[in-house]
Image 1 (cartoon, rainbow, N blue to C red):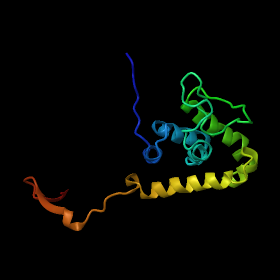
Image 2: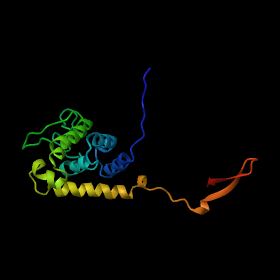
Image 3: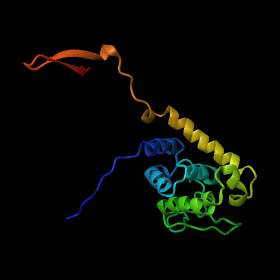
Length: 174
């Protein structure tokens, strides 16, 4: 007997999935992994996707391309030095490795913002600004996303009804 435990999709994952789909990213279906890895390592959930946006246009331009035999699954420029590039076994492996690496090699050393991480992560002085831009862009997208809105219920939508023979007053939503 196989038991499958289902868990609800984190609302941040739905937001991130929609954000990445809007950008035609191959990472869109890994949105829940981004959230779970960020939570596991206590990293801002927007950071790793924002680095992917900066380094590879959200996974569209990666070392080795998208040929399954040669791809590096490295959307983050992790370990890229000249023509050398580290690779991952899968997108999920890359997502978890990045979150772990950022926690241990950056955040634990007091490098908390993309600007502080910049000098250690990338040679481009503009890198931190680009990552911060994508983090902000994800945040703006999240604020306006339907997952962050609850419909307001007006008083006109609540109709009093008599419930059963007891005569208790109940309210039903239309």
